[in-house]
Image: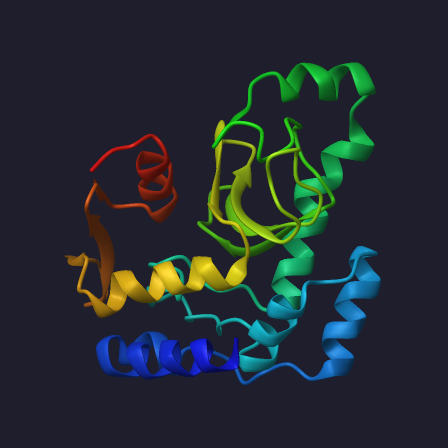
Length: 217
């Protein structure tokens, strides 16, 4: 995992220096332990290594800065906890009947990998899009999934996607997109830019993951 993170660091410093510069210093073991206590669940070793590498990204002061995950910003432990609490409020606010009705709106790809539920305390956000959609770690997968798989989720992600069986293969795929130049730069405000995938084309990373899972080229 550490070798993979070193390769990723070198790649983004070369290709996306603003992205690299916006990453926070790594978190200490005590901070990661405190996060685990707050969510009541242990993190996979790879996720702990990710946060020792960098504790998410810094706020951009109102300016757009390209996020680590193909544009989506890498959440610090503090921000991940805040989003985790907000996204799981529904579990305390709704009845079991309401949650069952909400869950019926969601499906996943590949089938059987992600539990069909409105929200879960076992989904740990790593990145968000600012609109209620997340990329994160699933600690309680469905029968065909794997503990620690990387998934998309959130109230408006009606098709959740298993983006990687664990964090390491997901990061390998992300690094491959960067190293192989499988992206286009899209002009944004404030003289910044975002990324669009090219195979299949999408201007939002979670849309790209869904299209890939559906078999688009």
